[in-house]
Length: 457
Image (tube, rainbow, N blue to C red; front, side, top):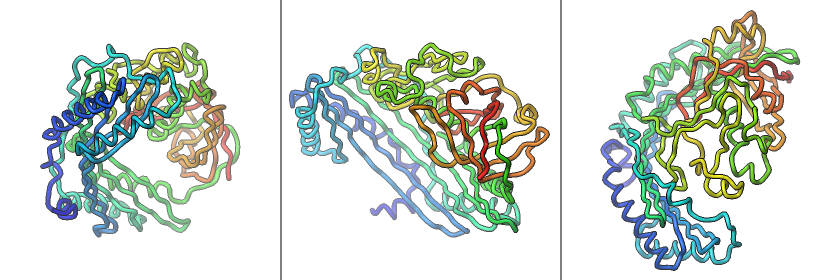
């Protein structure tokens, strides 16, 4: 049966990846045995299988239907302190042996690195928590198309100034991931991720503006309705019409909840092991020092049920646990894998592959009170460009949003740049909003900064 026929006729929810998990675990065990047979001193294997459906509608017409089902193997072998990696999508015995051999050949010709190797055996999880991440959505292309049409229609009908659409999309994905290593640990987890999104274009006498909205969740029952997504995309697009220019100066800046995640992301990148041991960070030697306002805490909670970033182990197979990266404004932990920890003479934080459910917490106020505290300034809803220097912390990016006057949103603005240094920005976070955005792995509310340089273009 072709992929096209599958996409049209088979609900993705009827494909249950739980049935293939034991097969993947057996393949991981076989690959580790093959690595041992080829005289590797240690090995680790990561296997993933994914299945999904994505349907896009534009201007009431079906535009794309995509069905995917993929399986891939990443194999790493060690010969002492030498390391080699190879990957394949072929699970046949011959292909596995050939891929292990390729990784072994790479390892034999690479330079020794005393920091290479598996994470310590005692760091592997003894049991895995039930994180409730797997909720297949029993939908097919026709049903997804209907939802996408409803979403776009709600947006187009929201306001007569909505004149065009860049499309509405409904997607559903399932994934099964298995990791194993020579310590005898083999762990797996299943997860789903579903979403609805819409991008709309509004127009008035002063030109066109585009904006979007989306919802995403592990469980489709927790998604916003298609109509709500479309209406919000329409509302945001219309609100941006007839933007004005602003004068250059220093003003308070309020980052929207969606834009604040990027600010936290810059911090996390700066305290990640790779940036630190390469000395490519503006926060070198910052552990135990104050880098943020003292009311702020940055918390990682990997075991939250049904959340996007939840996991029982990291990319090294190390058990995950709750921790603070920032406690009362002070750097409490770096973001470390086993390798980067060894390079720094430290212990892993269980963050190989990244962070898991990061939340920024601190002194909160309702959004309206944040605007009142600003009095006059900028509310930033979109950032453009890549003007961030990770070594010095210099920050300069194009932006658009709304001008705030007398503690209220006054009118849309665009064509300006906001600039500062990330060290100063992190210390100048005055208050947080009560509008925490839970849709991603880095979960942030609105963030109010005391002042930044605003330059009109």
